Image (tube, rainbow, N blue to C red; front, side, top):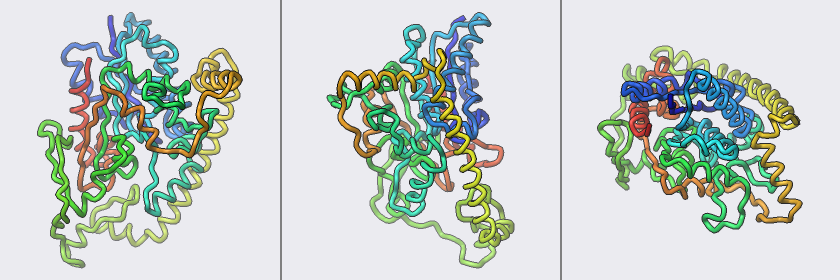
Length: 414
């Protein structure tokens, strides 16, 4: 029996349950017509395991894919088509996995069909002119191990000094660039997928903002609060955007309750702090405790991520020191050997310069089959989880993302 294998990859700190809504909707859409779709959610790269880097996370996912295929073959099923969708960090893992599969000649016998990402930081995490952004750019590479370094292009993944995101985005000679390298396996792998689509939040994504998820060098929504945006939604797939225009003039503010009235107290919302959403009067009780809770939470968080980062770096050291027939086939080791061979043969590449996020988007935007979709989710503090309806049970507003998932499911080609 012929099978279409779809792999769904969760994001940072995540687990397969984060994509439960995505799995449910894709199965409701395609299994009702008798299609042989097999949905797989990798399990070995959860929680603190996501600290280990895009590369090692991708290696784990690739291993699970081959194990799943063996399991299906034992049941008399043959995988003939392959698709992958990654959410947040999972989208970067998906791109790395495609490189692994392409390097191992996987697509010589299995047809690649759909490649999708949702709210993925394709060009890395950008540094904005704000205290929070600058602080994050300093702390994340230091406290989130290899993944944190790769998010900000602070790693030197290639022996030529290039970051992993730059290597993964390099289309090489196809665009007349001189700095060609073995990283083209990622770009060439993506080119094999006839259907490539990116989903991004236009606004309110505090984790993966528009520019890096949409792979754009400018943000047309940066002043949406003050200048206003007119959005034409897709009636069938709200909050997917069909088109938008900037009003170019200050938008009218909605009338708010007078300060210190009953309505004002009831509507008051806490500053954005994870886990501190609360209705009146608990919101004010929590607010009163912030001078105690905030420093405590920060200290506990730093302790936790420091411990996780320590164990992550220990795991990476062990992984990179392994020398067995299995590990020698890992893309990390293959690339290392290829670059050592090229170095002995003589320099062929330009020396690496400082990380440049714009370079990380060159390869993706060069794909002729690339399509992009926007979700415009308002009245939420952070739309990052909402776009995939990540946790509807605890955050009711996440349900709005089901419109995005229905669009993704219906655009999915079997």
